[in-house]
Length: 177
Length: 398
Image (cartoon, rainbow over all chains, first blue to last red; front, side, top):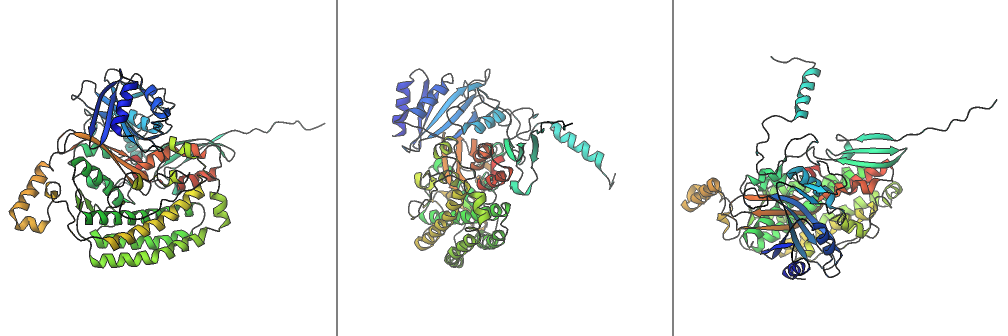
């Protein structure tokens, strides 16, 4: 099915949820409200004509100051059977950065959602094991947010300070000083 | 007076494996809950190699971000570069000349061979077959020498450019590459004679780490991990990029979805890659290696900069302002790298820098499936499973 047809079909099924349909270089993104995201995903996965059984990618984007709702969670979907692709985007506001987890639909979303939580601080409700994945568990802040400084935080991470102190304590040879 | 019968007490133990462990292929840490020798629970911890490439790229121009992609999957850097270039070209709407497309396809397949060679070497080494390691590094060295001949670098090549490739291939390079393709099928047979009928190898790979086709799709696996389960999905066929629609090759698939089938898939891919390289050399068309509007994206050669005013201006503008602003929009482009599907999701806000660059790394997805493959099996099979997902932590942690 052509991507625009799929987008129209989603709009037909969920007229209240779809906010925007956009095409760029042959790829279509459908922006939806976050409330019924699992229902939409479940339907996209199960509908025999669409059959989006493969979650290619799930990630977050921070549109600080560019859009009224700050975050977007982007789902890139593909169907192995029908060989078509669509991009679904769910808007998430800053005040309530939560969205329902789609791990029940695609098992592979588990780590992508963990990474999204790690990098953007978006909380996925109903996720089986929502922990940080790439950064240490006691890290402060979410690095891929636009207001996080690119050079990193001003003070060192606690774990690194501990490590430096431990190294000082265990030092056997004194070279300089 | 009989002895007091006491029930035998057993308890689960927790074993920490890695991050410094020879069979974890980098800095992967697994925490294993063991009941005797059986794995009850397996929890992977990644992120030891996290360098924030996605964050770094946001502050760079499209041209500057290219060398970052070398550092993703550092043993197949050429394929990552091509993946990034294909994505950016699609965003800008650049049409790459034919010759550059064929050269890129050729180097991508060379990378696939060198990556799969490392995989078979280390995988067999982990499972106790050491000899293959020594044989296969001989061919890897050959490929790295060819890369050095082509662009001067062996590991982090940064050879492809947005809109083409950096420099043209020489006849000398093509000749030695052709000689390699003539020799290589014999070498693949050598590896196979070493392990294919080895009873230990078969015992340790057949029926281990089984994942069905439906499950593999649901977990989002890609590359040989998915094809080993019998799903015929290859980005090179499904979304052809570069010259893959002009060369002839098969997509090998497995049946049982175990470690052995994935091994067979990768071995067959070596042969197919060899075939693609040969076709690329034979069909290599003459012509330019850079898109005609490339000065807007890529630095002109240094000797031209010193001699000619136009190039000097291009150089100056590119360094100070960055390449021409990208059109506003967003794009997801995937390429088939040796490990699986490498996707770049780029959001452009109409400036010369990516607003958001997301890298969908195959190793990251494959690591997440490790508990599913290992739980309920023996500790020794964990090693086989780490080997079969062909993990590179540079790509997993980004």
